[in-house]
Image 1 (cartoon, helix red, strand yellow):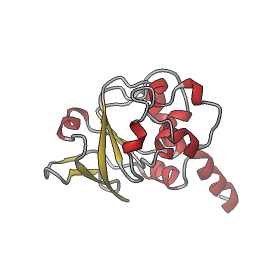
Image 2: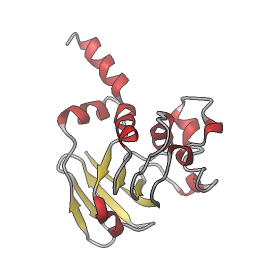
Image 3: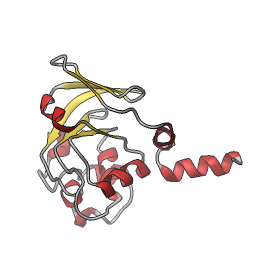
Image 4: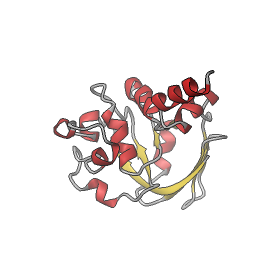
Length: 166
C-alpha cells in the first residue's frame, strides 16, 4: 500500500499517557479517542492533523503502560501509520493488533520535519520525504502483519479467518 501525507513530529520517550491521557479512557471508540490524541503533550495537537497525515516519532515511542487505546487514538486522529526511530515493544505489538502499522528507521527520523510531505510504500519499505527528496528503506511489513493491518487489526483478522472456515 502507498500512503502519502503531511508529517507531524513528536519527540523522544512519548508514553501512552501522553498519546491518550487516562481521563479519556472511558471509551474504546477510535474516533472519540482520536479527538484527544497527543493531548498529553499539547491539548490542541490533533487540530493540526488531517486524515492521512503521518506521525514521525523519536526514540521509544509508546513507552509506559500497556494501553491498547494509544494506537486506537492515533488511528482515530486519522493517522494511518507511524514512522519512528524506535518503539516500545508492548506498544509495537498493540499497534499492529489494532491495525496501526509502524516503521522503525532509527536516526533517519531526523530527515523528516514538521510539515514535510512523506510517502510510504509498505510493500517494499520505501519511505520518501517528498519535500526534500530524501529516501530511506526499511524492511517491508511481513505478509502475516500486512494481513492483520489490512483486516483492521487482530480481531478483524481472526473474524475473517473464522468466517472463511480456514
